[in-house]
Image 1: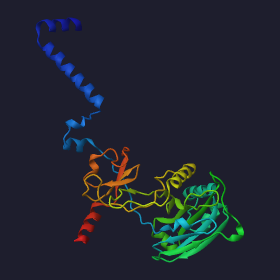
Image 2: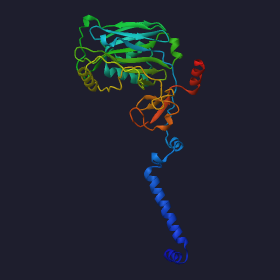
Image 3: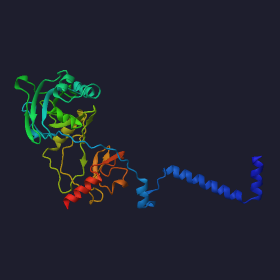
Image 4: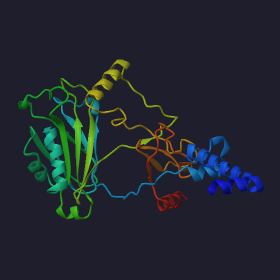
Length: 332
């Protein structure tokens, strides 16, 4: 019946030809748009279409205040035999507890206990979680808002010159910062900070640095503190006194330890200008590469990081619009 109807329509009506052409047009258009994924080649797009099609998902962030600050003073002079100097910068009175030769396994078990069992808000809580799996402990009282230099060293009677070959079962040094006053723990979301520090020794001569830093929250979560990579200033080139042989040897040591150079990249003088327009202030951090290199005006045009060309999965702002307006008013 349908065949008879089509033959009759073919013989007596020009609408058949129009319907066939229209159907072919619709099918061809659908195939073309499906092939390109609704993305028109760049040469055919204007700025408005680019802005509409390019989407960077904004990650919802929650701003918290970190009361702890810790960095290494003169890392080139640190070693297992001569010790290490740490500089603290805390917003409240705090306790710095150093654990030499801390067990790697017990440390990560302790972090899991902070999440599932009890909160590590005091040095005693971490000791209970570690089951005393460390070689030596020392503790210092840190006054608020005072950048104190603390010298830490293993006692000479321990006669420890190295912690063995890689992979190791012990970290050379684990530094714990906790709030000294119990009332301050109700003010801050972050109640303690754990820093894993590598110190060169007789066997493993990788330069001294902070490998990991974990922020422990009162709610039971803990987060790995990551470094943001800012766009380098063209007027300042970081100087390096190490020879190519030393750099290649250090690179191989990093690979053995399971670390990439980007994760332990030393801080350098950075530029606050957007790498694209060179005019706006850098305000966006791209994930997962953690490059902070785009301003508010340019971030909408990029699906790939302009620094490393990695695809952007999420992004977040360093400052909100209200904070930016306050900074402008202060500048005026």
